[in-house]
Image 1 (cartoon, rainbow, N blue to C red):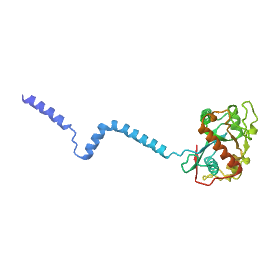
Image 2 (image 1 turned 90 degrees about the vertical axis):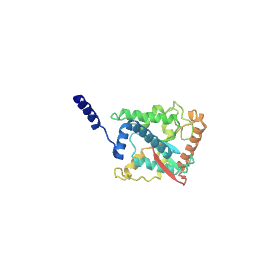
Image 3 (image 1 turned 45 degrees about the horizontal axis):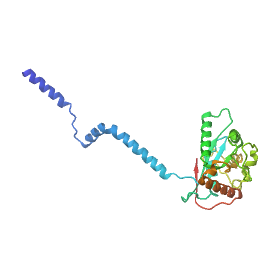
Image 4 (image 1 turned 120 degrees about the horizontal axis):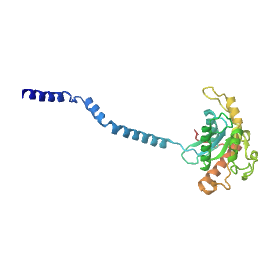
Length: 257
């Protein structure tokens, strides 16, 4: 019996010696966290992601006009910003949010064999998606990018006299303006980038490569929706102000796309 009593006592002592005693508040917090963190961490992540989404939606600025930029090179950020600021001076506040916001979307399309095919495909998908949504009515383009996409332009642009360019027509030169044809661009004084990587002369040379064409509404999906027709008409009015150098004064904001 003495031996049995000894063994029983030994077992109890062993159990009690391993018992975790939560003495301080810190100990209790750490113990609670240990047992609940698997449930808490996912919940925190969900709340954080929701907060980011709500903030992004609340602070998002919708552009009044989106301008397409088809180039065989990536336009430097400073160049995009200068284009947006220049065009914004001639634009109106279409959505009534108190700001004039222009977004220039750069689609880089090159015929260079060394160009990344996945990047080319991504640019083409963005261009076709935006075009199908009628998000853009005014396009700036250089000769190389234009030639790469020429097969997609059947009936897409209108002639400079405002008439529809037939789908089988190839006289694209009659459906585009040179950079200097647009008074707003001819008067633009380019500035270099803050880091000195691009001089004013370099930005000016890139701008000089650009021509301008506008969408044709006749016979297109633009005619099927009133809001798209309104956007088209407002875009044509914007383009006329740009050609004639008739700026609108007001609060303007540039937004790169």
